[in-house]
Image 1 (cartoon, one colour):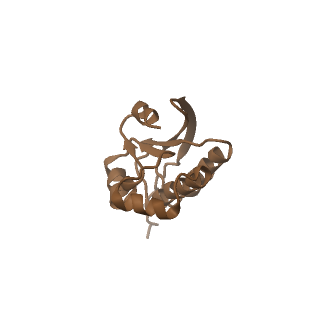
Image 2 (image 1 turned 135 degrees about the vertical axis):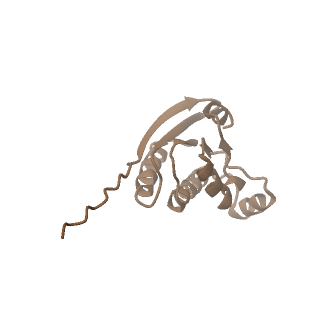
Image 3 (image 1 turned 60 degrees about the vertical axis):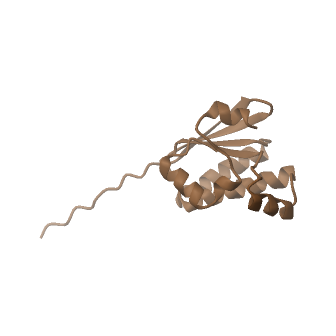
Length: 145
């Protein structure tokens, strides 16, 4: 009896690059290529935290070439949001909760651009759009900081 052939799975690695745009403030744009999932979110988080530790204070996460983002990727974006809030100390936790509940808080330090339809749905279902602005255009996103 011949051995059944195993199906080869093609997993695409995630590539991360960063660039800086200058609007009213310097904005570090983190470009993601590939999926952000349980096997890649730690790399995304480590690279992003290094960028913050090296002095970036305003992040734009460009997901134009990210074809999938899982809950692990969303959790990483939330971790980055909290890290930047700690650095900037914009509002107290109580004030943040009140503003988020009222729908009046949008992070001035982290934004997301070019969500795929699937990523946008996950972003909205998880409530991220209530406190992180999304854009379909990099230039408009940079100008919003």
